[in-house]
Image 1 (cartoon, rainbow, N blue to C red):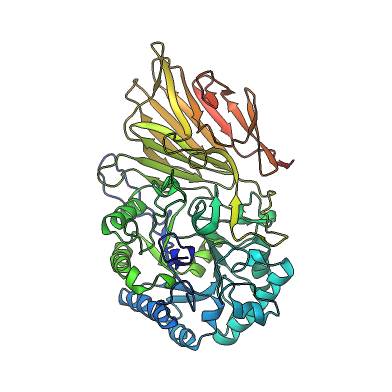
Image 2: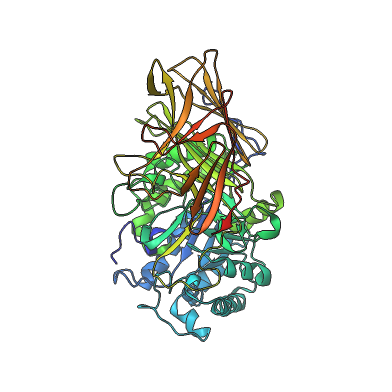
Length: 567
């Protein structure tokens, strides 16, 4: 595998930016200056994870990797920025990293675990190494998913014992592209970890798919599925999982659509469009700090040392002074993973409702978006060409096990899913973007409704969106709440409006039966339903997959009582 921008091994040194930004009450539509509010923090974690070796490129020696971490430490110290360094086992056992990290100020830097499985850890646990190299990034070799539950416990015990011998305590934060629930729960119960992290949502990149989960932010996972938010405290692992890498909330979702693999548009400093581009970085943090967020807003940036300092230096030198500046202005709070994990656990007993909105895109684009998450579902709305497309709806069920909870992965790839209702990426082709579009029947014709910029406002556990239309005189009022969403037409004239779901012809859809008040679905041997409290579902004659019409100008969906069951 060559060292390229899609190489998983290179994609991230999770410089986890958990930006605990003190939330701003910015009215972007009146031009008022943002007012910092401590009630809705904006949080940045800077997290770097460390590997000892990189077998895919002979030019990337152990010394090159070590010097990369030295440079990361230097620039973070220069700007007095705290952060978290996560050690893979082979790096943990290297005296250079032990000396470097042991000398860091305890109040500013956290040392934790990066949970990829290299050869020395496997052999010390008394197991047989099956990899091609001393570190092999395949899902059934380099991750805990590739081992039986009993083997996972041996691996964890060896790592934790040696970590404590070196640093005098057990790590409080454990990150990885993905950790199975069995391992995560054991780490919590025996070693009392307080925070974890996994990869951003991605489809197929480097052979790892995590798709449909709690977008960005942080959540408590189900005890039988580390990717699935739990709905109840009794069924959750009480360790918040932070989503890594700082995804572009507009472009990351469907970048690369129509090609063989999904692209990457994140805060990772190696990317020329993303974390290595000053224009993009400044836009991202402007939206992050000035656009409204529900509960808190969070981002993580950074890079694993596998990318090397030469590739990431430009991005680091753009991002670190900017983060320091935003902190000095009171717009963000920069913490370690452990610190934010403790804050999250103190403030939330179950996974909260959160949002990430963008009211102004990069120059030259008029796109607007909002991501809303709760412990029951996620939804993404995208305003494009002055119209509205519901691009994504996925449902969460704590009883939906991941396939690695009780047995090891047998493939070199790994997949985690939730329950789809709308999927604007998997169900799309480059010439047919899937989603639910807002339409109306006007003067005998079906038209896409157009409007001005949406206005976002946050209440207690909910987001309100007011979207003034231009096609007709009035507004669409949208409420996103923990258990579902409501959409209402507010105008003097009668309007025959509705949402139509369109997908590519090849899309494999979960819908089995469309009834006026419910849609019955199945995915991955799990049955579930979507219910209309107000409004009706139907199968229209215009080629759309499904239509959702209002009753008395209101659509209200229950997205919490999905009646999920094994088929």
